[in-house]
Image (cartoon, rainbow, N blue to C red; front, side, top):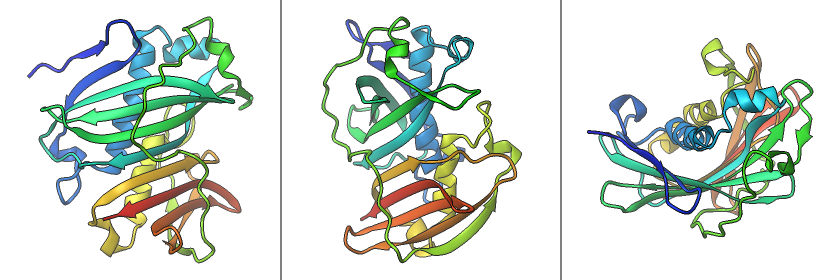
Length: 252
């Protein structure tokens, strides 16, 4: 089977086809959260690459584009062997954040997952945040205004009843070329730390905020508990007193 990649005529909506393989799935043959994070973020990177905003081009201009927050609504979780089309596009920036949206479809065009994300432009050396306007000479301003059926990727407020679930040492294979844990690896941190009765439950929606970078050999304490007011399970990861990530999961 040939898998295609293309931009739709007349806009910058990027499409990418793939198949979900055995190693990308969990014990239930469902797509791993880490694979969802990887497929969507890599599709955004490939969109940029095909429009000339490659890693090297950005690096030469002292820029790195890093995911800040992400939220998904899972209409139907993809399974092992499924054919998938990933659709992604930039939306209008919000303040200092770039906005990117996603839709995942099955082979018959049925909507599987929809999502929203926000990204920050950071100087890799100084770690200072830059405004979205620094990209205007590399690509036009984005404002397609296409609605997406997904939760807000806003700030996550966590309850006070969180308990330590795991202490995890960051390994070499979890760190990418930006010098910190790759954003997709947090899907594994979350699923591995969930109490056993929740690991196999069907996820309806999922939000993740990245707060502080985590690097090689850091120890990440992962805490979790139910937010009874919102009806979701909350997980946070801390390095010392610094919160590094926050996540909410809603289950069926």
